[in-house]
Image 1 (spheres, helix red, strand yellow):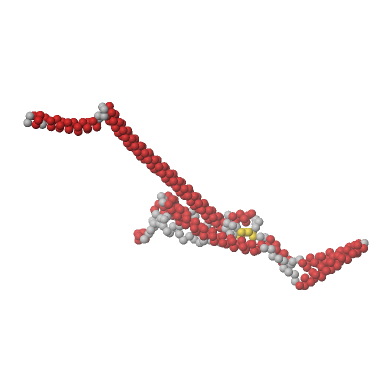
Image 2 (cartoon, one colour):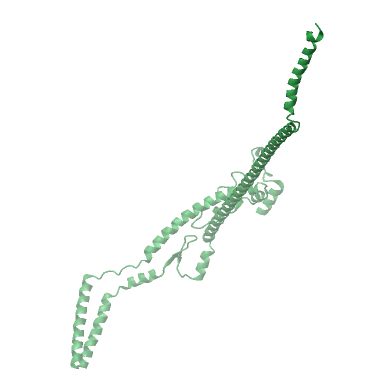
Length: 343
């Protein structure tokens, strides 16, 4: 019947039997609604694990629907929501385990108190007095047996030894605990044990059938699933943190290498600029030195010319220009003299 109803819901929708008026206020439930159990969507709901056990959590207040779970698994947002749902489930499971471990500790303390050996109860005053009298008789008879034995009276010594044996039986009867105490000690020898997984009390060295029944029980399996999920979740978180740390270290190393490359590139660029500047300075110095050599060579050439023409060089031209000018002026003056022209 339920399978047919689910098939009809899938084909015609869950609101197929609603009237038009009811449809107005009807809301289609999706997997991301608050009314839907996120624990059931992602893994398991702890409320389903301990039904009809001592650890029963009661019915889950949220919706469990296989169709919604399948819709969640096929949703493109599945991978985005899984970490959040698992984190919520982990918090809930850790609270369950914390409460359980508290009960386990109390159970261990109780067992430790029960297995402590209890001292035998003290004898009553009457029994203590009787025991003292019996022990004194045994002591005296043993001394007499020793004396008779040294005197060679073997038969008499043996007769006294039989009396000593009877007195020892009486002594044992006085010190022996009552039958009720024996029963209590036998009951204590049947020790209890505590299951570390689910916190249940067990009989140590119990029959294999009872032990197997406990291991396959809902409470043991349920808490086993809860503990396994917590361990798996913590391991995955630790692995993710380790991968993130390694990725950050790798990224930092790559940034460091990039900075070193950039620094090396700038250093080479600066070194190239310095080399070019140095070459430019050297070229300029060579040009200046070459110009100085040319000036010195030119000066030597002029001096050499002056020595070849008797000191007439530039100085001769300058001198000839000045003196020649005066000579020409002197000639013109003579040509205009009144004496020469007969004035």
